[in-house]
Length: 133
Image 1 (cartoon, helix red, strand yellow):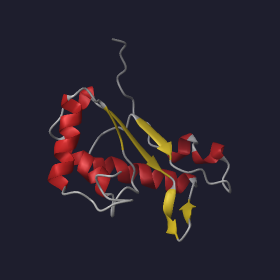
Image 2 (cartoon, rainbow, N blue to C red):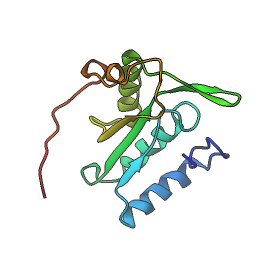
Image 3 (spheres, helix red, strand yellow):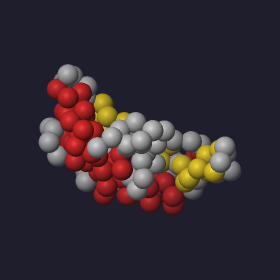
């Protein structure tokens, strides 16, 4: 989040990519982002560029949805199945990946039953090869 400036000024993209790559080279393999980190999906776009330079099969990628925006002193949330699906499709496209290892809701919308938000109709499920090492 800090790489793309949600609570701070963003750092240059090439520095952010270098940080992600250095973290991977130090043994970090889990990267967590969100469609709301930075302006116009800036953090997902940064992670996408870093992933192009790393072995995707060795990385666990997480991203989130559920924040529609910010208003003064509170977060505006949206948890409709249509919004969840739209955000998932947007993240897949922005990250330029075929799958997301962990996709979860950033903030729960208490006006939408969670069972609706996470229903199978909300997401694109793709068969992903699974193996136990």
